[in-house]
Image (cartoon, rainbow, N blue to C red; front, side, top):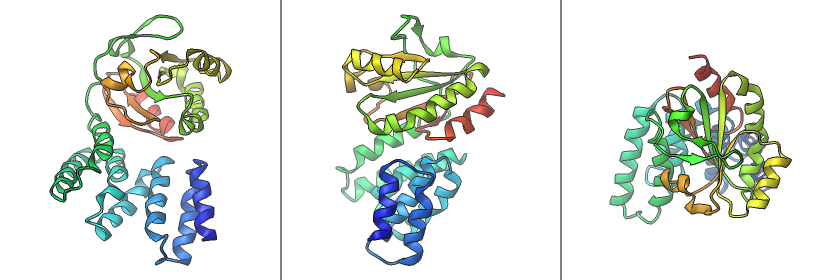
Length: 262
């Protein structure tokens, strides 16, 4: 229990780079405990969320072998890992199969939350959807056409979202490191309190593009892109093609840099 609580505490604080060794210590000491399954899932998830999809993938594939009738436990993470490891075709085939299997197994009530993530992965290698909005501060028009020529992170977030705030220092660091090379961020706020949003943008020095319409989950871009949970993001290349989705931590810089050099 102590080993599990230690690992869980690190996970809950979103310290994903530190979580895998903690879960590995639990699994090494007690490979068959009642915590084993969740420890395996979170060890793999922590690798994925810390930009180490190549380490997450084999662990998730092992879970699929051991629990073929429980895809709701690992399907989202496995789809992301396949896509992130350059196996987009395999990701598409996996998602289609899992959706069919879950429907046949009458697990349709569990499917919507998983399908939201699947639909995000399906955006990879496709053009960014068309839209026209105004920058929250300058009033400048923002559209995929206006953003072409830059590598763009479209970041869906909110001031009330703790995981979003936990990711903010990494997003800000990516902007500071890469903005002069042509990296841009479009923050899409799912807030309905304009004053609170303005205070955070100013206080955290979030010096990039922002879209806000005060509609929370009915934000026009959130609806257009089917966003049902935050944080969520899309990394778009200079030609307007989505190259990765739902990146975390150092992965933003690691994937944006080569796109800027193309």
